[in-house]
Image 1 (cartoon, rainbow, N blue to C red):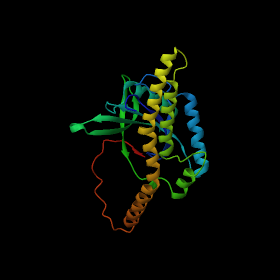
Image 2: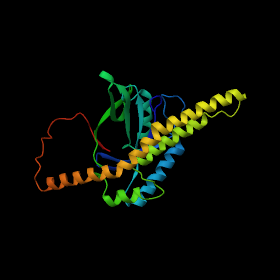
Image 3: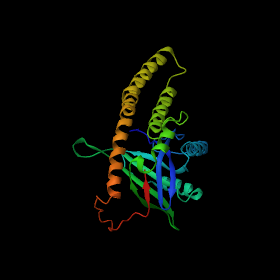
Amino acid sequence: TEREEVMGLLLGDVHQSQVRIWSSMTLRRSDKRPDRVEIAPEQLVEAVEYAEKLSQVMKRTCRVVGWYHSHPHITCFPSHVDLRTQLQYQSMDLDFVGLIFGVFNYGNFGSTHHDLIAFRALETPKEIQQRNLQVEVVPLCELLSQDEESAAVHDPDLGGAYGQQALCSAVQNTLHEVLEMMPQQGDAFHRLRSSVHFKETLVKLGTEMVEPLSGHFEDLRENSSVLADLWRIKASRRDAGEIEVTDASQPSTAEEVVNS
């Protein structure tokens, strides 16, 4: 959100030096401080079980490959807390990656921009250092076959694992936090005033989150189909030698590639 950091876990697989991400789980924050995120052990276990379910449904390997969180109104560079957290995950899985989204940053003339960084942590004798990774965003059809994607989207237990589940989870978590605000005690006037504020918050939740989410679902299938067709045409032309390959010899400071 604009006031608090959000977090979640990333699911996919690892192929050589590439971490391929095609699903995510938005998690409820256990730390109530707005600038802190912490993944509870039971949430990690739930994500592992979810990845195993995806593997069975899609008939391909899927596992927890990383975590993400947001930095509202600040840069996307990891803090010392983020680096320590990342290092802890890497002690369990060397391929584990971290993503940070810098959101709600305003530029000139009221424009907004969002930033993304992928990183791992490198422990040195003096400090924990940040190691940036290259990020490449590609259509889902480049990572999964149509059968694999359809199997996950149409499974009733998964509920559409790509985008929809993450967005729905964010809305559900927001609603849960709103419900916690509902007063359970106090004098009658205080409860009445708080109830009015509670209802106003619910209306705002529906206007700002639920309705746009509904519109997103309506457009998602058509947009994904059009984009997939365009990329398949491009791939077929490339295989036929009709597309000129650009020079990829320019040096890169990134050490690895993260696909999402």
